[in-house]
Image (cartoon, rainbow, N blue to C red; front, side, top):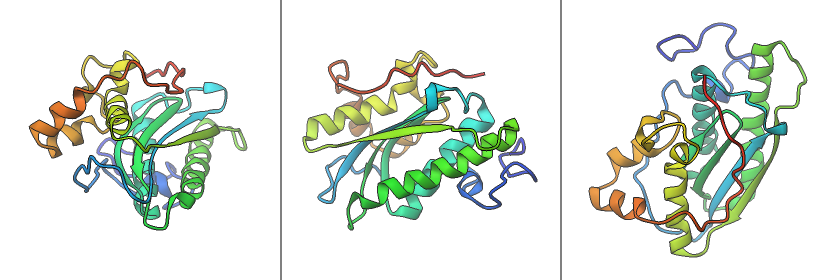
Amino acid sequence: MGDNGTPEHGDNPSQGGVVAAAVHVHWPHAPVHQLSENGTYFVTAGTYRKEHHFRNDKRLGALCRGLLAVAVDAGWQLEAWAVFSNHYHFVGHSPESGAGTLARMLGTLHEKTAKWVNHLDGAPGRKVWHNFYETLLTYEKSYLARLNYVHQNAVHHGLRPAAHLYPWCSATWFETTATRAQVATIYGFKTDRLRVLDEYEPQTE
């Protein structure tokens, strides 16, 4: 990617794949803040051996854009997301057809981003992603607490003192799109008792 966020020749070996599908990190939907009848999921995915393949601004930006792009293509509505050097989380509503598209959606993201970082590192065929884990959310309080957890995840990992200061998460979008009452409500939910697989210790350069 160039300094202004536009793709440069050689940045994306997939030529138009998910890495370059969206120039700017943008999510057009307004927050919903209610469980979906089709399914609302909390999803975590990590890199193989927790390696920090996405450790700088350029790579974090590409991964974040890629996640939003595949979600749009698959009909998922994300309400919170956070992308790091070796993992990511999101809370999202499945399309009307159900959550059967999740594995294919993330498979596309992982395949394209793996090829891209391997091209940058001169490591063709290297295993980049390990697996993903999804949890169907059926209780409103659990859902709202996980929204807060994802928005605040950069603070949880000690990367920023405030969530909106971390560019590769949904906090800024949420704080500027939701009402003040919505922000206060979501940010008021405690997350210390949530059972979340999140032992990644991400890094940034």
